[in-house]
Image (cartoon, rainbow, N blue to C red):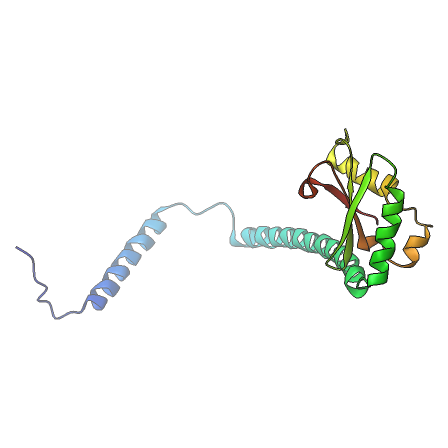
Length: 177
């Protein structure tokens, strides 16, 4: 048989009274416990020094992040501020087709993507180097030297060389900058 609530006191008042009773019990429990050996001043000093250390770490992290972001943004700005003209694209494509038309490395195509020229060169077999060394190899051996006339028409950050064996989608690539 269910118990009916015939009390004129509302549920909210009962909950408030219960909370007050529980609060009194908690305060009595806390009075029985011995006081901590660490004073409030020591705790405050500890928290302040901890927050200073964490703040300094955050500022250093933000500083490094801003520096890295500004470097990447400046490279992006070069590519975005200098859109690729059709004549620049043809000049780059012609340069690489002449460089790689008589060897086992074969110029396949060039494309413009996001204000960058992507040059695709098919090679007979994979290079026996780790990916990062392959990327360095592309910059040092495949990209034209800085004094080359091609760089009068286009920025090195706007040219990306892709080396692949069978499929373009599985290429290793690097910017010429």
